[in-house]
Length: 388
Image (cartoon, one colour):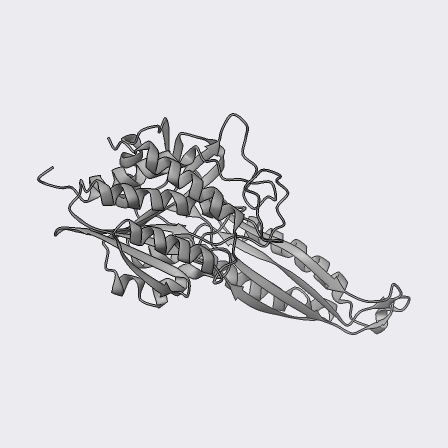
């Protein structure tokens, strides 16, 4: 069982709070990237910068053997922080509201420990990924040759998880997070005086019917065993209260727990948009903004996480094959190219954590030694040193 020094834990906690004061949006994490690189170099690692702009991959080799990748996300969110503690964000309108500061500090702590305690045989790649929040930095790193330049047999990532107590871990042998796509629908009718609707073709009434029909799509066109969410979140139509408008614009999000269901929903939504408005004399078009695929763990690697967590100091319970979240995560792109697993680390202490993406969120520093311990245990178990 790995024992993490107090010096490493202290450095990681101090770094986490420093990063929290200097949040940066995706693809603009220049200060964050420089700080990470400096520390990795001081640990004696080979450091490669510039992948996906501000991304970093640091490599630690210890003899011949397999290779493993560990990933942390480094970007912040465009949220004005409402906390008042000493390490509050100093960048107006930006904050680490998802805990990426903690993920980064935890992985850096693991890198330092493993560089000083090489009880493994093989290679570890520490991946610091930019732009997880919406910009798809994971896909960028993959497209720019992450797995070609840094071959690895497995890749792993963690995320702090409010709603789960500190000391508890959750991992599944399948979907952990949903896919995420946005759609933009335009309904075009014929404008007229609101007192004489028969002279026009009302896109508002057609839109109301379409909204209800899209909800019935889930209950009647998909299996009840499929976990899917279609949410219409924006509507814009009309300028005057006595005019039936020419067009109505609506937009929303689609979340699915399987990529097969995702493709079925693409087809059905397009079918509904074109057919439901027709009896109203209205035409419909949909434009897609395709987002992240399902974050789907590989069974063997999920089991590796489970076993590592069960043998890590401070872990009190491991939840296995729990229901997935309907939120999305671009680690999905890495899992599509390489066997691996993504897991949650409980964030609730004596007081429940604020939710992710909340203006009062702050990463719980008690997770740092737990996270470092799991990373180190995972590496030592997967890259076993026969001479140890």
